[in-house]
Length: 546
Image (spheres, rainbow, N blue to C red):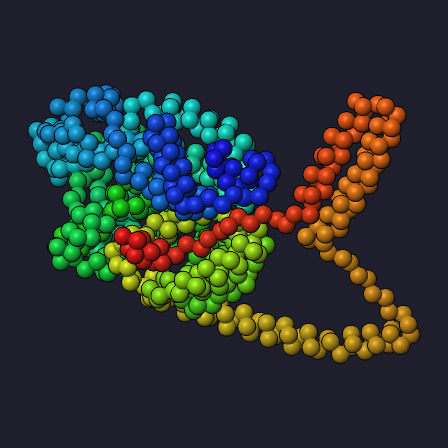
């Protein structure tokens, strides 16, 4: 925290930002990664969440923390066995086979492969007998540990907020609330089973996707048993290529599935990193781990549709309006600069080449004109944007030339959203024309009355001065600081002449403090050095470096 704060303020509490090279950022991120691993499961989960939040951490930190998505050591089998038997009873009585080595280690639990016992299925579903299953077991004694760690996070937050700007503080506060809510939900396997079954039902009959079924007889609050489905990890491009699987089609299916979950169904799988996605030999997308899942309210769904339609139409103003209305883009952001960023983002999403000089030019504009981080994440949108970011990365890994906009446009057209948007636009235009006509009919009498009052010298104009940037406040502060400085310097001279050294030293210290405050009032606002991130552009740069 101290190192990160020094990068933002040279003297921690004040001063200009320091120029820090990417290698230093990366080294600090690696130190943070080791600290999170040492601190245990709760902070590993926090690191996973931070790895998808470019509004909170620099890109170098994001790249390093992404390793936490899969590289989590599992707990010892003896502890997991105690939890399992406390929930279901002896392992031998419930499972014909049980592999004690975890096939997946998560921050809050781990997954084991097993086979149901066909001899004890008389009181259970006959279709489950002898079935290969994946058993997810919560880490032993994790509940008390998580609650203690959440208290640490909550107590540390006010200290951290002091070192960041207003918009980053907004994102951090929401991140803390989101993290506490999400981690408690993830520990509740009954909720996960409910969300899994609901999403599975929404995709019922769609053979492009496979979602494991829940074995209710072998599940509980701390244990979740699901059907075991094999597949190739979705980012194992070489293996997918060897099996002859159409990677572009897989990317399109993946994006369409999340468009359906978020826009149509209102309930979605919120952790689509490569460890939770696989592909069957038939090219079907397999979803694992529904611990992190969420719901979308109708307002957010509507605004997301408006955003995608604006992107499909390449209407930059409509894109910025949608982002502002949804609460993601600060109303104070420089729209001209953000419009250029959006144009480059659309180019990148379409797989078009972006000239490096244009990226550098926009970076310069951002550093010169945007003094507060323009993007922020409201609570009700944080998981949705997390999903969009991670899914984009997975799709670009599958196919570097994948066209997100074309797929989203096709989906919106097929579902009738674009037609509905056009119909609403025509309705609103008709209403606007009617109101304009009514206003024109009232304009002539009002104009005549105004001219009559001007002729009689009976017209008054009231003028109000809006000072949104606090110019008058700043000027008043400078005048006060100037008067205080003059007074203190005069007092220091008089006291020194009267041979009162202690009092003159006190006046000198006061003068120095006033000088510092006066100097700070003349400094320009500090830039956050925001750099637009384009997935394909970064991917090409990494390939060039390799």
